Amino acid sequence: MGSCCARLAALLAVSCDAPSSDEAPGWDAVPTTAYCDEAREWQPQWTDAEEQLLELVNARRAQGADCGTAGNFAASDPMTMNPKLRCAARLHVADMAARDFFDHTNPSGESAFERIAQAGYAFSTAGENIAGGSADAGETVAQWMASDGHCSNIMNPGFVHLGAGYHPGGEHGHLWTQSFAAP
Image (cartoon, rainbow, N blue to C red; front, side):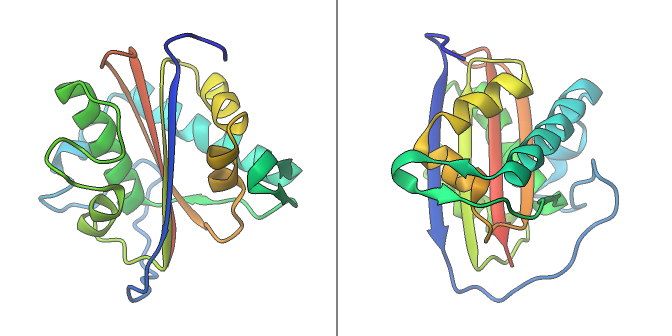
């Protein structure tokens, strides 16, 4: 958890976009759109890491948490993996690895909220956590839970869907993105 190479960042926003209730089948699926093409062909071990991340996050949500300055959170319902959010998260980790940056906004100026919308998810609220440094989903969740802003994104009962993305590479060696949202 205390790696000198570990990096974290959290982002939260609320929007008034129209709600969307569509959910694609398949826990590892992403939408079959041109925007999500690069997120469809994913290494099985990366997909397994993403699924493990969701399980660990939901286990933490079931316990409740003290997120320090961001507040105390009671136990909350589990989130489900959303294919559109998974597309946004995967595209971001792949982009961070390919262009060697670590930020919520990519070098072209695209924000987390733009990625989520371009993936086809109409949200009323959304957020993003990014991390770098560990190949282990458990260590990554522990990093996020030790940071008030990241913890509050994970524990936020208003978020019902999660998209997880894992990709090796970049200056930190391993990159993670969580895209959170509710329609």
